[in-house]
Image (cartoon, rainbow, N blue to C red):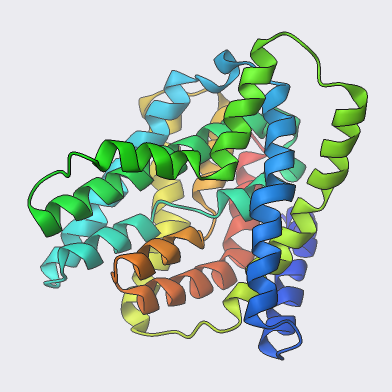
Length: 309
């Protein structure tokens, strides 16, 4: 356990460094925005393309793993929405609270952290989770909130969803990588060196950007924020473990990656959705901060457990 904690410490240390730089004003919000763009559009995309180019579509299509993860997410989603409705929350607020408890920071934190600590064999499962989060649940959120506001599905909604997915460089990078893999051609050495060099910047820059982006966040409505952080860091991985190990009998190593990914703190893109739809952005912002801070203690515990698989 101590060994795992010490291995995760440099990752969270980089987040802390970014937080300090943002908090002191040495790294202003504009700089954080541009650093995030660099990671999102270039470094992380290069890393994901490199990973995907060395996989096949069959590596990603693990029906048991996908079923277990979707089942756990669905249960958490319904439970959190039900509790929100008991508090008489608006549909938008209930939706974004549910979203907080299932969408982890797999891209910026999970990709570098899990692949380093759980090994290269975790890559297909991490990419599978990214695909589900970015395509399935982002689309579900948009469809439900559109229905709740307009009372009907806009005939242009499918086109808008496809365009939104295609505008996400992580999805595009993974899709292009899988397509390249399908050709049977290896990645040329010079291109591989370029991708490796650029992708190597993803881990430190992404972690620093996470910390810097947390610097201006404040904790509002502590009781709700604590509940949502508990849902993301404890309830989500617990139900994922039950689904993967008991219901769907997922292969242990794959199950370990699913559980570890489910234990990650709330992703920053949930705040973007909350802000866009005016669905409790301050609450989401606070939950990202609290869940990220709490994950310093919880994530090593989960990873220490699943490494025993």
